[in-house]
Length: 99
Image (tube, rainbow, N blue to C red; front, side, top):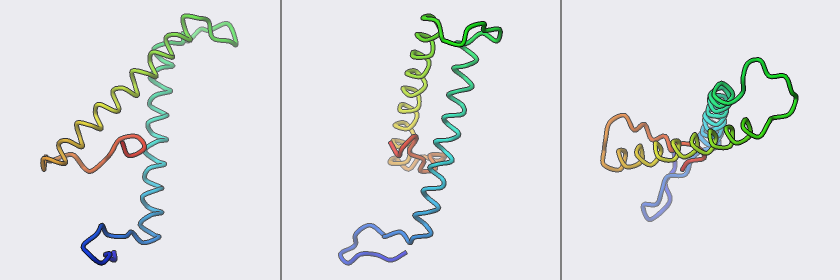
């Protein structure tokens, strides 16, 4: 890594930027997969008979997704607080989209 004059933040090399982007894509893909599996299991019966969602299923999915993202933000904030306080196990992960 090279450093800017004046003690600024280190600049990442192209390889590091690519690795960071790949890691973020993997994290987002994993989160989407967990979201889909969780909300599908909670809101859509295994023996569905219609191609379209009914109102109850649609409302359930909407609430499930909202709660999933709310929890993700809260966990990310907690991890950032722990990282700022020097807490172990924070890992520097900023949650979805670096929040």
